[in-house]
Amino acid sequence: MPGWATVAAMSAQPVNDFRYDPQAILQALPEQWREVFLAEYEQAVSAARRPEQFGALYTMLRRLALQAERYADPAYGRARLLAGSGGSAGAGVEQAHPVLASLIEQERARRAG
Image 1 (cartoon, rainbow, N blue to C red):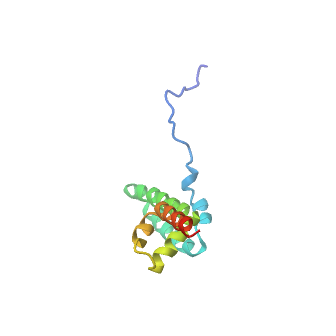
Image 2 (image 1 turned 30 degrees about the vertical axis):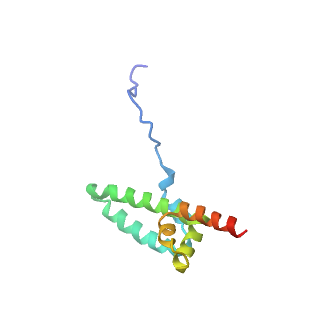
Image 3 (image 1 turned 30 degrees about the horizontal axis):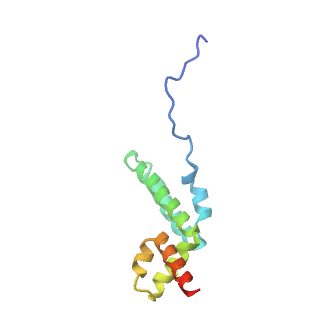
């Protein structure tokens, strides 16, 4: 149509990446981590006013979104408890690798059971 501009190319990237939505992250985090999130978020938003710091805001949101996912995983909580108890020689590995911790716990339950 005359007078209408055409778009030559479009990005495959979503307009909004809701995985990193601050409100969704806040709701997904356990209560004890929400104040920490809000403090970090406010600091990152303030710093993001400078163009060179904008990426830090995205990085912080991505890190906390992943952290919220970990906290929502029951295996992660069990691995943290096991690691904190000091009752296992492999506690350090289990704390560092929640998936491995889950597999170790399943194997222990199988042997005990």
